[in-house]
Image (cartoon, rainbow, N blue to C red; front, side):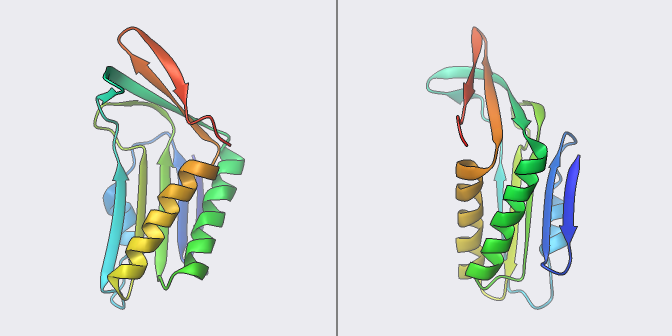
Amino acid sequence: MKVLLNMETKTSVKITSVALNHQDCYDFVADDSCGGIVTFVGTVRNATKNKTVTLLDFTAYEPMAVKEMQKIANTALAKFDIHKIAIHHAVGPLKIGAIPVIIAVSSAHRNAAFKACEYAIDTLKETVPIWKKEHFEDGEVWVNAHP
């Protein structure tokens, strides 16, 4: 498990093979000065492109992934008027309904939190070296061929 917790920059970044906990992310960003907390919780769905998914398997180049996730968190803090941000991602095999990613953002007002959360998940999917393999009843395929 790779964890980067930086109270000075108000970020929590984690890659782990342990089940993610929504409450941990919420508790990290919660603050009496904030009137809004926005979370994105990605879950493993049971189908893609009309095929039944049996599980997803996430792999990461962890040292670089943590650096890129921290860069996303730092950029969100600089670009949006937010108080704190948590970006946590799971690796390893995940069953249907499991949580591979959680992003939580707090701010004084909801709009900044919504925008920062959307920025964080969109950028993570585009730039962070985390790959997933979808397993089906009749085979498997790698997806997210980035970066």
